[in-house]
Image (cartoon, rainbow, N blue to C red):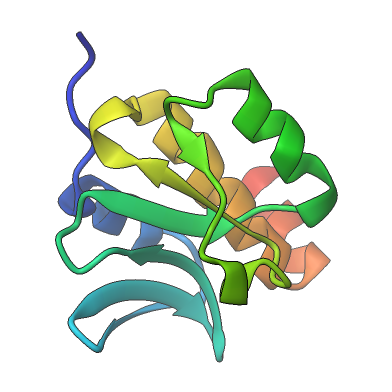
Length: 116
């Protein structure tokens, strides 16, 4: 069984991503660039929401329904998906957080940090 992904691991990665700031909003840890949140945790830190293209999220959820799920109905209008941290491995977390960050920064900055 893979190790459980933790907020501390996400924090360690997010701190390396330019322009990221961490905030505690209504007892929830959130990472954002400017005013745009790209990763947020549930209050109990059991689930993580992250930026993800709306047009691709049904496929992501269908591929791994035990891991990924839709956000609450009021958040469906956003580019957002949620996952269970206990089922998320480190490599998946790294890819999801990095890609969520890429969605909210200028293209030149993403290229500088990640390459093409």
